[in-house]
Amino acid sequence: MHDVLRIGTRDSQLAVWQATQVQDLLQLQNIKSELIFIKRDGDKDVITPLYALGVQGIFTKALDAALLNKRIDIAVHSMKDVPTQLAQGVKQAAVLKRGNWKDILVKHQSSNINDNASFTIHDSRFTVATSSVRRIAQWLHRYPNSTIENLRGNVNTRLRKLETSNWNGAIFAAAGLERINLRPDNAVDLNWMLPAPAQGAIMIVCREDNIETFKACAYFNDETSAVCTKIEKDFLHVLMGGCSMPVAALAEIKNDMIVFTGNILSLDGKEKAELNKTVSINDAIDLGTLAAKELLHNGGKEIAEQIRNAKI
Image 1 (cartoon, helix red, strand yellow):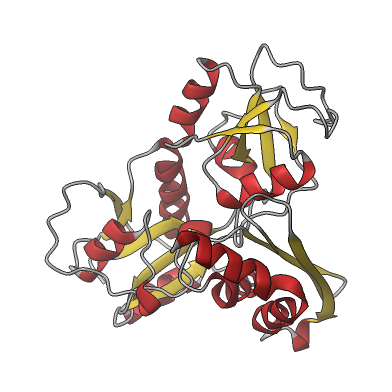
Image 2 (cartoon, rainbow, N blue to C red):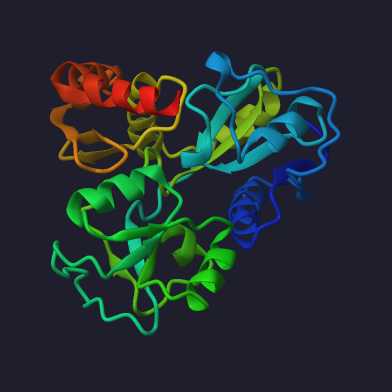
């Protein structure tokens, strides 16, 4: 391990906040560190991360490349953005204590959506923005006559776009806004919306051969968060089949039991397959995989095949 451990991060406000949390945790072990900012565009690395099954991490690829090229020692990711199988040569070192996993609706200042976001399901006047196929599918399942607008960019950019739009609102991950104190007062918790697998969790990765760095990060691994997010990621891995699908999952530990809910919806939200399971923590090692296989046998397979055919 270098005298000063190099923490790779993107340069967005949220990414820097996440990397700074890791820096503070390392400082508690008297490990000096510095932030290294890695940009996605114009990356000149000669080593390209090789992802199993051809899965490409849109938000993690540049950091993985920098890690494999030894420009950095660890990379800090929003765990929901990490591919279900890491790049070859990259290893999970820690999962920090999970934050708020919920999605929220941020209303436009002129919007007449009430505080409970419970406007009539038959009202077609409402326009909501998001680029997430999971959020789109779940929103349309509940409010089928809504209009969906595409919204991309970091959280700051998306908030600015919402302000200058004629939309009624936009959907965000609560943790992303709360961590950098940007959650508006008019935001509404979407308690009915199931999150993306590992939403609200932060993952640290290192090279497989970097044993000292792995041990340093494992010191602040949160076991509960690691167990629950692994279940959710395993569930996603079985269902996704190499393409983007509206898959959601949440595992929580309650009274020494794992309470799990997972679903998959058609792209238009009209069809939905969902599964709920409660098992002992001791029986949870393969819960995500087994739950996904059970869901496939109970309506999920038809929805997944429909989505794959639509993308051909």
